[in-house]
Image (cartoon, rainbow, N blue to C red; front, side, top):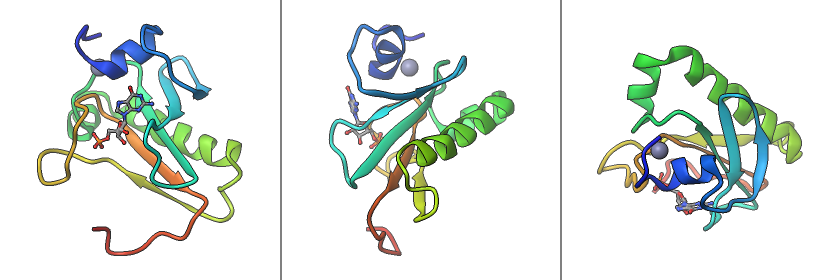
Length: 115
Ligand code: 5GP
Ligand code: ZN
């Protein structure tokens, strides 16, 4: 828990969010500024700054984040139509919140390559 981290504050309930799915270790909530009809952020409740840090120090948790993202796809009805998972990491990827989060995007056709 990091007091100045907005996603840690969503985990503790100090900052409100629209929760879609929750397990003992993972929380999924709707992005404030959605880039697709389904845009959910899937985060570990434990603070890790980025996906590399989580994957190296807590690989089981990293798997739980992915499983939860797939569960959110089922909840939002996009598992069959498809979805995209994105972990923005560092400056070139425009990471703005340094609590690892998986963007789960769906319910529209995605372009490739991303901008
Ligand atoms: P990043 O650019 O770091 O990959 O993405 C951060 C994401 O978090 C952005 O899509 C932004 O809209 C979202 N976000 C930032 N602050 C909040 C917040 O307080 N609540 C919610 N639900 N989403 C947030
Ligand atoms: Zn945090």
